[in-house]
Amino acid sequence: MFEIDKSSSIPLHEQINNKLRELISKVEYINGKMLPSEMELAKVLGVSRATIRQAISNLVNEGLLERKKGAGTKVATGEIRGVGRKWQSFTQEMKSLGIEVHNFELHLLWEKPPRNIYQFFDISPESKILKMERLRGSKSGPFVYFISYFNPSLQLKGNENFNLPLYTVLKESCGCIAATSQEYIVAINADEKLAKKLEVDINTALLKRTREVYDINKMPIEYNIGYYRSDKFTYTISFE
Image 1 (tube, rainbow, N blue to C red):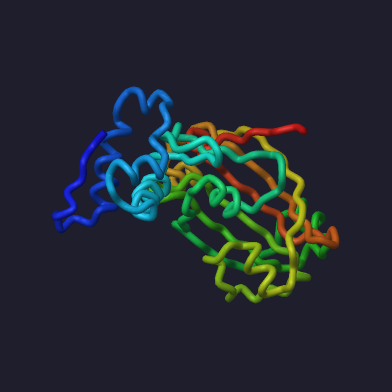
Image 2: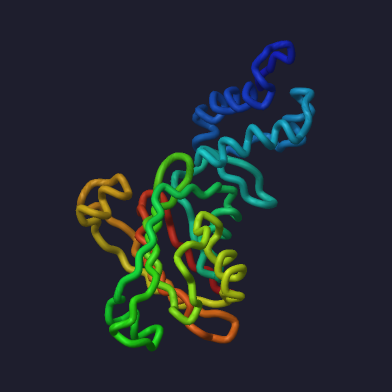
């Protein structure tokens, strides 16, 4: 397979990381061959599983590898799959795929919402509500631009730490527990603004995912619009 130098000043996990980069560039791995398990690599290289796990996690976070529970680790296909089966937050979705989420932009402002949104929250058209824009992705770059509007009943102040997972913030700040969502998915072409934010060409196909989120009492708490790079994100639906 490959060897590492335990006498080197280069950390073991970094050596393994570099060797794995070489390994997964081979045709058989690009075509879907599974990597050896953590236990197998640890035994062959004479290191701990924790060291192997650290090296592999780095490559997963970079989007080069993907891990599936019970299946193993293989070269990433370049797309991220959201599954329409059990409702999850974006952070939960990405965590389940072994992807560390990065915020590239985060903007908060108060404004009068569009008609469909003040109707969704059943509030006055003159109400100013909190709007949040976030550009998010992995270490390799942004792949989704989110716009969220929040029900004024939550009494958010706008100084909450929205770098934390959103529904953790809502639970800790408002005692609000997100429970269900209604989702609508369409294909659109990137305009100038979206193309710039998502680092694609104008008119590139994007996935627009609108999510209406409710708490455990069925009260609408968030209206969210997400614009996803279609070359990085695939939405799959499972029926049981």
